[in-house]
Image 1 (tube, one colour):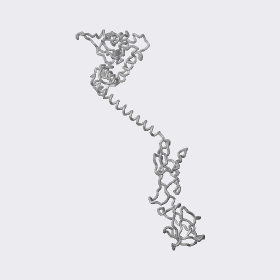
Image 2 (cartoon, one colour; image 1 turned 45 degrees about the horizontal axis):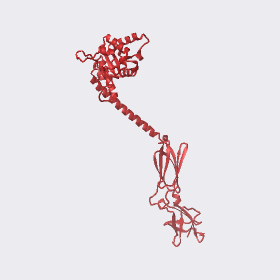
Image 3 (cartoon, helix red, strand yellow; image 1 turned 90 degrees about the vertical axis):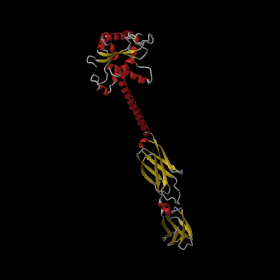
Image 4 (spheres, one colour; image 1 turned 180 degrees about the horizontal axis):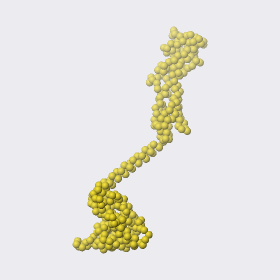
Length: 382
């Protein structure tokens, strides 16, 4: 901007069109020239095209006519908001006349928001009579001085938003005497890049919100219990399993009687996911588990059978209602001998354990059955 001008542009409008004037001022002042274009000439602005003067934001308490005249003198361009309403405004006409008197007739840029220029119909005419006076239209090409305005709603393809952006670039290119197509192609690329950035930003935010929502949702955990023993085991299967999950301030317990032996604990607070909690599992004939787990959606726990339940054999041998001391026995092929009180004891490995055993004396002529679990108060009658 030449040094004698304080403002890049004076926005002339009728008060009823303030929303258009405000939008135009903000768009012009927010526009930033691409760096590659700035380097083309030292006369081009390095910063944004600001300030632009608009009456309701920039006027100082002074005599209105004098103040507006001063602002017009300090403005390089006159942007006229054109609507059928502004076409009837004497103030807009006076500002146009003053700008022409200042010798800046070629610096006037009409910006059409509503209506049609040179329509001749007061209901649709958007050019103020002062514009029509200084830029008359004639069917004779030699006399025609028609001024071409920038139409914010120009006809053709494209969204309304892109048409408005295109209009802003038309205004900027006129104000800076630059090639419109060059600026517009760069602006379209910049708009596309902004859209891509916005889209990626929205996707990221939505993904973050989705992740946050998912991470803060209560979750369920399934604890599956299985017996850790040989497949050909002849002992009773796992049953009546008690599973207790100790959460902060609450113990969740479930008694399993289903064949899949899976306890399901629901609505666990999201903050406990991955945290350490205590787990207690017990079942008849199996060793109890007290352990710590890191809470997740599923856990598989193995129980080991208590080898003493079916594998520690103890009983008193009775023959004719009398205990038989120091007698040699065969218990399913394993050697054993009673003590002085007729009591025998034998430990068998888990793979050989059963719920009942055949007991015979050494000569094999007496037989009996030992049912387990058993203890020193049980008897085997031969």
